[in-house]
Length: 303
Image (cartoon, rainbow, N blue to C red; front, side, top):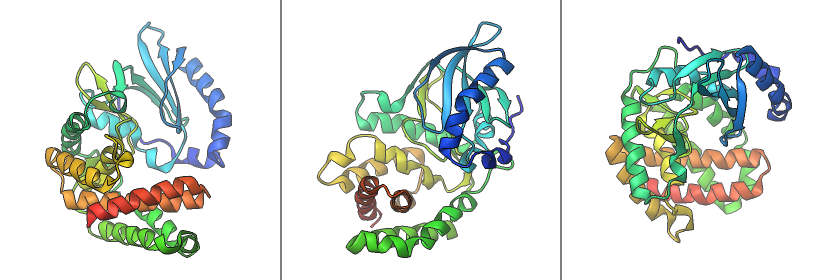
């Protein structure tokens, strides 16, 4: 089918994520009725959608996803279709107004994060997949990385004066990370087809090999997407020297994916610093402290 961007007007329909949560069950019920689907078990996934396995009127299994409208996911369906069935679930139906997708039920569909394999084996599989994903021609209209990320930088920079007193002597980590982000955005090369959230929970197994779900598609620097993969595989945060684990894993994955390792390290530092700002905005001190530790490790990796 011809997928389209989700309707941006839906973003304004909900004042908050909690407001959408209150309406989610009704939205799911509407789409079950509209598409004549029989509901099955809910699937464990991210916090930004209601996802469940369903049976179609023809008796086949599929997955219904009703998403929380947010700007990063506007192009999700277009991204999935752009990569094709060898790299992502097929989009069977779409309702752009309710942010609903009927997707191929990929089997076994187990996230890479849940496989009990050595970190290097998982990194190898994901990095190979990423190299293929990034090389696919980017569909027309997909936003550029620098355009998508700059509003986040601008907001974090505006709040910097409020955040620095909270961080005390660690304020230079946030300042340095935001400076690195600005430099990266001012010099973002390339036209890679970016997933936008290439973490090991969004890489799933199938009879055709590994495939991706839940993209936030963008066009730009291929080095952007390795940070969550390298941060979440293995056990860098239980090691007394997480920066050494991160550097080893980053070099390994970047070589396989064909990505500039130094830029990937700078993106890791910048994105970890951005997390500090977000958690401080949410007044989540525990998460902000964890993000600070991660940003300090990534700063060491970036040199």
